Structure formats: structure tokens, C-alpha cells
Image 1 (cartoon, helix red, strand yellow):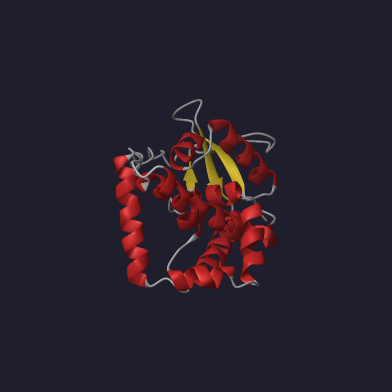
Image 2 (image 1 turned 90 degrees about the horizontal axis):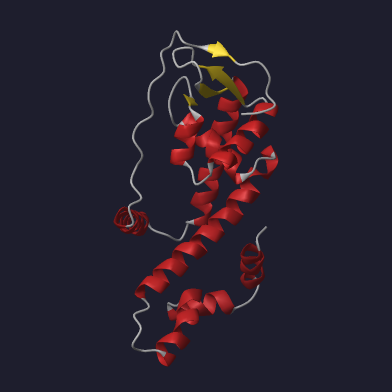
Length: 208
């Protein structure tokens, strides 16, 4: 549990959270009120956006970590399983494709794949048409785990957002999309398809 997650749970037992709700103010409002008074000439709109996005991210990370505990998976593990399952049958991608779609470095992807290989959730396939290329594919156990964890995470989010209307969710999501596009965070090109006949298992699972 993160420090912020622990703070949320502590606040739930007091009147502080409900009092803020009654005033229509969140924690970021409290953080920026002083700056507005002290430096009224500074536009804090982007600061508030950054802080709210960061706080939502921390809340979600905390809830996801708890959601994944029964499977003994990290959030990075979940993200890799998720992107593989979402790629469609046969649920495989190159490590470079995963790197482009996840907020992980190439080394981070390699470390996650090593854990998932040892857990029997993915397997490596060599692309003979390339000679050097490797593909990572979900095993039957990996597919089952990816689907089970996704169902659990969706249920957890439904609980978390129970007081958020569908209209609010769609509006917030659309606004954040526009912000990310303005920052140049575009969808990566689709992964290159692999020749079905160029498929050789890679022995060993000690590295990615």
C-alpha cells in the first residue's frame, strides 16, 4: 500500500473527506488555495491538472496493487499480460512492441518477461523469417491469468468509481485524451504481423 493509499483509509474514518465533499473541494484545492493568495499573477490551471492527474494515478496504483495480490503479480506484470491478451489470438508481440505500448523501459520489459517466463505465463517464440527476432506469447495459463486479473480489476474500478456518473467518466476521459494528444502521446503504429510458418520455440526461460 502506498503512503497516499494509507492516508485515504485513515481519512475514511474521519469527517475530513465528507467535509471537503460538502464544500465541493478536493485535496488539490486545498494545496493551491495558498498559492493563489500568495501569487495571484500565476495561472495555476496546469498545476491543478498535473496534481489531479498524479493523485488519481496514485489512487489507482494503490487499488491495482491490492487487486493483484491473490495472483502475486506486480502492476508491470499485469500490464504486460494485458497488452498481450488485448493483441488478439495468438496473443503474442515482440518485446519492442510492448515497450512502445507500455510505460516501461526496454530493460523493464525484459525483467517483467523474465518473471512471467519463470511463472509459466508466457513463452518465447523465435521468428525464423527474421533470424534474430523473438516473439512473446501467452501460454494457456497466461491467457487465463490475464482474463481473471482483468475481470477483477474492472470490478475494483466499478467499486472505486461508484459515485462517478457515466457522463462524468466519458467527459473526463475525453478531456484527458485531448491533453495527452496535445502532449504528443499518440498511439504507436500497429505491430508488424509475423509469418505463421516462421515459428520456433525458444528453449529456456531464464531471460527475455
